[in-house]
Image (cartoon, rainbow, N blue to C red; front, top):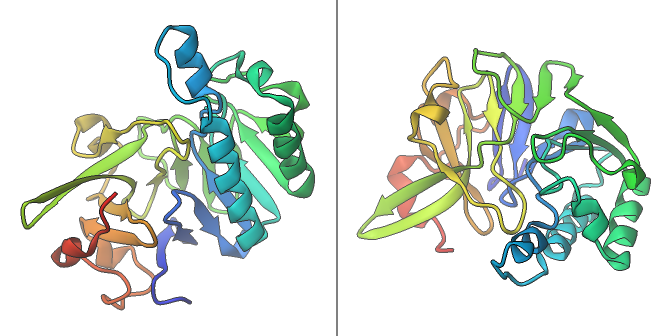
Length: 248
């Protein structure tokens, strides 16, 4: 195991937290992504809020790089893969070709989200309201009650880290060892602070927070030592090492 990897245990399953915001499940050769929000830029443009129309391509490029590096057998997209019901129709021919190529190369599971309850039929792969494998349950919206093994998106967790007068707002993972929330993977997605009750109330035990740096994921808050498989603190900095978090 690489000394820079952030590996945690969720309901008995070993998961690697990627600095891209994805989760790698090595035992199942499964890549997990949350909240891709394809075509959010074009959706905003239709309402007069003009953003550069490159978010889908940027997100697809990052997904392609992950697949090329990790070579998964399965990809699970945890819902809100498309920003709205018509987003699939707004993809151009090149984007459709790239996405279709990815779904042909790897078995995809598209979990339904609140933004895309009916993902485009041409996607390929399998469309499910939720997906269960071994000790994990993959869904879009986390249950309000404790759910052992739940891996979910929807919340877009972020954390603010303050150190030596520097304040950084980073996308993050949140877990108590029983369930895991993923950050949004999409290029234009925002976030919801992990200190808010809407996030903290989801966890039966004290929540640990893992912030995304440019090249590493950093344990920055909570009982991280109880969740980390690799307890080498040089590899897994605690809150005492927050100053090492890269600037955005």
